[in-house]
Amino acid sequence: MLRALLAGADARRATGVANRRAVLGDAHVDRAIAATSPLTADFQDLITRYAWGEIWDRPGLSRRDRSIAVLTALVAGRHIEELEFHLRAALRNGLTRDEIVEVLLQAAVYLGVPAANTAFGVAARVLEAEV
Image (cartoon, rainbow, N blue to C red; front, side, top):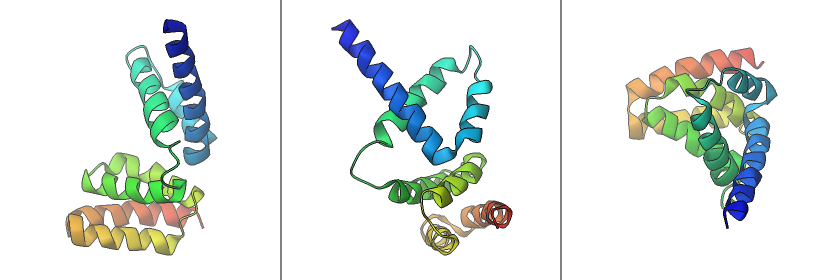
């Protein structure tokens, strides 16, 4: 039983690493892995297996749709420090610049102008750098 649980965790970890690299890019994942410390190792393993190995691998939404949900959630939670790399991921997952603007406009109405204003500032930096 334990062996099966460990094998399942290993498979989710491998899937998670592959999904994380596909969505965020090798450079971002390599930086995150290099920055892993004894303090953060268990957390990195958790998000790799759970967020990237299970949630991002579910068939119910495309990666593109998951990016829309993530952008909205990050704006809602005022998690601006993560917004920059998820904007890049949204582009990688097929969202256009115009669609990102639409997501942020939608966020302005439902989440508040100050949050969207900050998000637009981050998006401007990211989208201008991606030209």
